[in-house]
Image 1 (cartoon, rainbow, N blue to C red):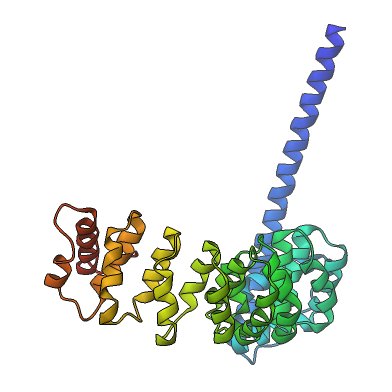
Image 2 (cartoon, rainbow, N blue to C red):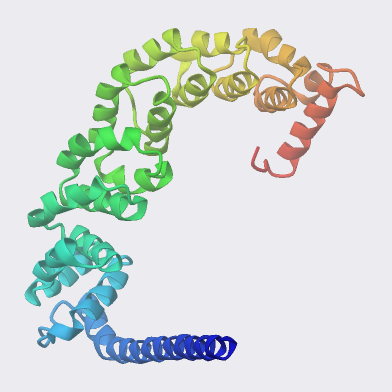
Length: 341
């Protein structure tokens, strides 16, 4: 019995080793084919990008379409304008739009992802419904790229269609969303403004963070309503950076008294561009705050005020106190080039 167990174990080990070797050989073979394909087709595509009068591309064998799609998507990510349109025309002439749509329905996950990227670059309206379904999947990578493709195809329609998901899906990174939603900034800002009144408090910080990332101008009445009605620290912290201009002075000044230290610090940063000399007592009082971040934020605001000189700053805090240390730190940062605060 022990002998047969040893034989079986040895056979299994040999089989596993053979499978690993075969997989490795297959990967090496595919890599050689890929390199050969790139050597053949990359110069043709680059020539197409650079020279509008380039001759049409030769026929593409069916077995090479996946490789072409991979190379085409890679090159497309680095071109814009007329060069991108020439790449699009070349892909359509080879039937790559139809091939990419077929991959959405029946391809592997990597193939579907590549098809999503390609159809977005092609701005293919025929793929809208399939891409919309993919955007609803729980797969974060596939779904957010499908959302990007929808924005590329029809920014205004995408703003109306995607905004509810954008506000609810925490697995969609806000910075990534803002990067590809920029072409429809005004449309998304309008949709955000429409959705703000009905959002649960837990969803408001994400909506405001997205508005900030988009540099979207939300309607002042919506912001006023939030500033008056919402006291949750997470909401107020995301709201304050959106308040620009003297009309927000009193509301921001009031936030300096918020019980949450993070809100006080954010309110100080918002005061930097709207403070007036009469605010000096309120701003300097926060040099004595119990929270170190608030003291430092207060020091930075005071140091940047145009109506305060260094002697005035040094008179605000006695040497050896935490307030004095915060001021020294802020002054040193200003003198050494204003590092990130």
